[in-house]
Amino acid sequence: MNGKRESVSIAGVKKHTTVNGPGVRYTVFMQGCEHGCKGCHNPETHDPDGGKTIPVKELIDDILATKYIDGVTLSGGDPLLQADQCRDIAEALKSKGLNIWLYSGFTFDEVIEGKAGEAAREVLNFIDVMVDGRFVESLLSEEHIWRGSSNQRLIDVKKSLDVGKIISFDDEFVL
Figure 1 (tube, one colour):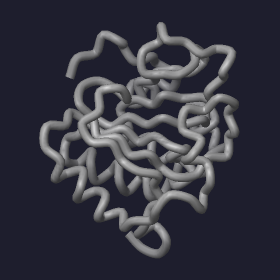
Figure 2: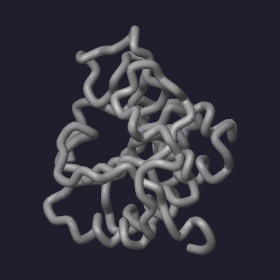
Figure 3: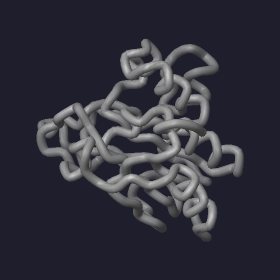
Figure 4: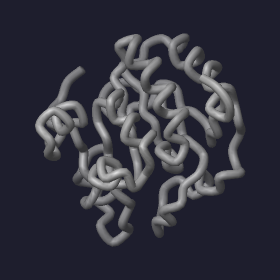
């Protein structure tokens, strides 16, 4: 890691949470979002100059030192606005066998098409499930597990990349 990628801006973390994916998870709330979704659940994460800046290695070490987690969720804000750091974090955690979820206001298609930048595309190589799309308040849904509005999709990233089309994540998944 080098340059500005050595640090990451976060709003905070939640260790041992069960609401951002299957099992017990360590969730990182990345700082910064440009989507401006009305009714966003985490508006305090929007300001790119807010939150706190910590070394990427420190965050990775803290996650790896956290016992009794089944996986890690990168949320926000929008993690893909710090794609270089997300790639480094996800790659390090994936190499240790952790299940990794990513929440983004970008759609999977936008990421594949490069609209979120090349580094964002690279992040996908280390992500198990992407919850994609902007939150739409009028589509708020409590029926759809692990997402805020019904337009958001749970995407099995590896399968989708392998076959070249979006494959939905099976909601019945068990770790």
